[in-house]
Length: 106
Image 1 (cartoon, rainbow, N blue to C red):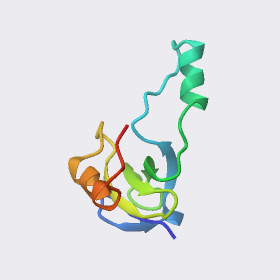
Image 2: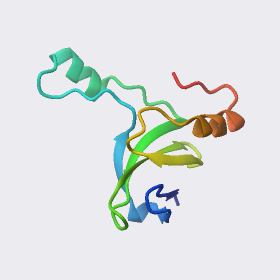
Image 3: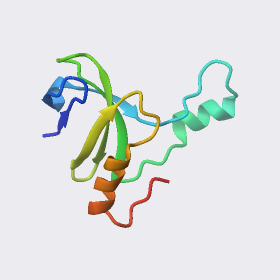
Image 4: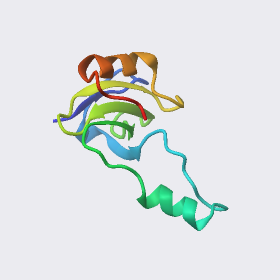
């Protein structure tokens, strides 16, 4: 079972207490965007097996959104951090690289 620590309230929450919100750190397109931009946002994202940055909401707790770095194949969690963060924090990147030396953010 997937367990994430909410960085807002500090509670270790299992996935039944959380609501997934999709991929983190995306450029989201909406009204006013071109058809090509919106299509790319919706359909043209890589879906590789491995490390992902995701949005989560502590639905059965504090109700706040946060971001998590985890491996989709093993469910290994590298860390959680504030939803207001525009890029993964250095300590999260360091934790990922310690376990996956070949991994890169791009």
